[in-house]
Amino acid sequence: MKAPALLILVLFTVTVHAQTNINNYKYVIVPEKFSFSKSENQYGLNSLVRDLLEEKGFTAFMSNAQLPQEVAANKCSSLMADVVEKKGIFVTNLTILLKDCQGNIIFKSKEGKSREKEFQAAYDGALRDAYTSLKAAPYQYDGTTFTQTQVQPATAVPASIAPAPVAAAVPASAAITDATGTLYAQATPNGFQLIDTTPKKVLTLFKTSLPDYFIAANGPVAGVVFKKNEEWLYEYYKDDKLVSQKLQIKF
Image (tube, rainbow, N blue to C red; front, side):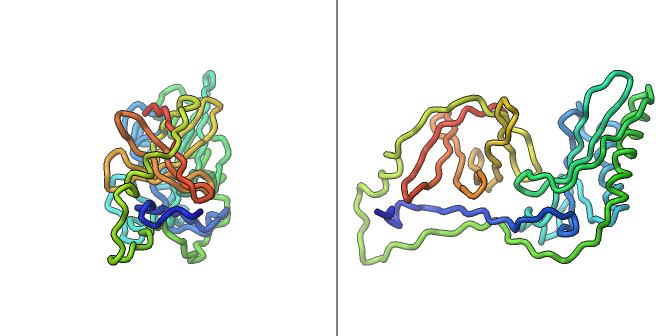
């Protein structure tokens, strides 16, 4: 039996045009801080990534900058830049990643290396070395149009039909399963990605206008993650039935 329309307060669907080519993107958003950094724009790496992307032909922005309307309204129209560090002895290793709004890697540079002893020179040199593979990659924006994240209201209940008092309480009766393990939140320009101890990405969370309330994407499955009674819940519909799962998230 299909769930009554009244029970579906808001149905979230995340539809992203599948892409695997940097030519499909004009914009790139660069975070203020990379995961291995101790402070924002440490060693000038973040601003250097932005400048190198501009040199390549992208239109790049820092995540704290004012974004064009088409990017602000549809974050899936842009790539997110990231730089990861591989620890080494007497050598600095950096790799540049360009990811889509679901965290999929669209481009991965070679591992840039530097043997400079001074940190500023080492990180600068390793990043520029990594950039050489991106610089060599063909790029020409092809004008691809993306389907943005959509929020679709449920079908309204006719005004002539008075909703049964019990109907509003039905969603809360969904069976709640316990958390299966700790998930670690990694910040993204649009929210967070939740990683397990494997490490493996389990969920992608997109910010909303409400605190502690996220649109959640897990492949083709879309739902919501929110805090209730100091616990995190992940809710989505499966076979027209509401599924509610506790999550143990460490931010």
